[in-house]
Image (cartoon, rainbow, N blue to C red; front, side, top):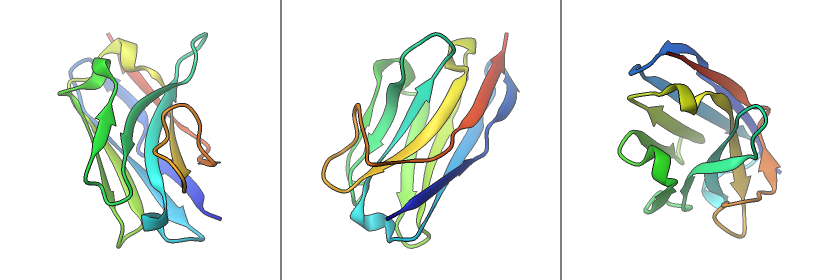
Length: 121
């Protein structure tokens, strides 16, 4: 089974950028569809971006379209989320997720521990 470790979170001002990374180990990343989820305090977890096994297609939730870009490197076993034009409402814990059978939209088989992203006004 795959293990996932996120990094790259932090504190940034409104309008700033961050790049999240998800390092996979224990299995080859190309066997998994990948997704980034986030959960803000008091809110339900939501999918931010979800990417097919080859990276040929990615779903984005409406609130991040045009600002966030997910990408994957199946050779390096890495999955990324480039976040630009950040807003305070993007503040959340961001999780990397992987699933063998389907592109994660609400659930996934494997999860990372999460990384905090805080956007100050």
